[in-house]
Image: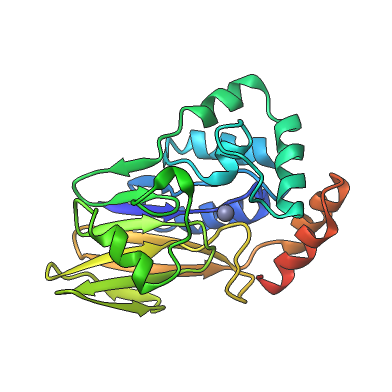
Length: 241
Ligand code: ZN
């Protein structure tokens, strides 16, 4: 099976379409989204429609839950807060129901998904270092977990009890190790590379690929500004921060 795994679309339709176009040439069997379909950019409904059309498995992100009052926005920065409030006004009740029903964790025989960490999925903590990774490795039921939330693609690898970090674009998984893979962000990368981030995992070859693709950033920026969202949300797309 060839799986597509992506995260943090954040209502950026241009980035999402570019990633789906790239996936269309990859013989994908099933799609998985690690959370935050909405928030920040200007096309939440179009992004939700695409995710549903793909029949993708989706877990909840903090912006998804904040948009339906399932998580508070007191810890959100002012710009993120503004985007959440804007998104709440745009979403109809059907889409709010869809978001409310998203699970925090998905577990399968091949891999699991969680937006933040497995320790407290509902707190949406950031899995940013080996120490936090250890807490989540202790709770994984299989050898592979995909996370999102930081918008920085990368792979934590546990071998015996030693954890290392890799930003390799391609890695062959082996059964003596366990892996936490951050899929990066489709719609708002923050690793200094503005290209949309996405993953492919092939269960036959055990090959994991971390990929990037250009998209129409100018159009996404225009839509953010036209929607009356904060200009900073448009500016940051160009620098990938
Ligand atoms: Zn996010």
